[in-house]
Length: 108
Image 1 (cartoon, rainbow, N blue to C red):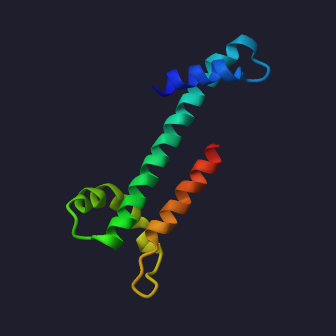
Image 2: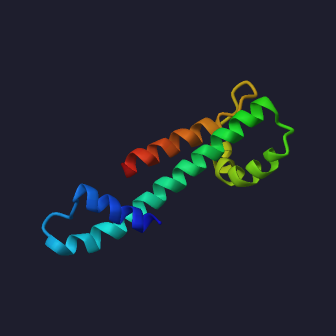
């Protein structure tokens, strides 16, 4: 799907890799597709992290919390080792969201 989306986007914008002429599409389309997949994955993880944070504040005993914990905890565990809790407040979710935003900005 990402490759099809990149073909459509490439056709509408008319982008090409400079200096490669017609062969630029062969290089730029897979690269663009990988970028779209990475952006989608980062946005999906960010959505899960936001849902985890909001649900942990509002209703930590919710049944969906178990699923969210299994999906997000592997990403939060390394951050929790580095970050101390401040007054019992866990800031690892906030740091994860900031890191995901930085990743999205780097991908452009």
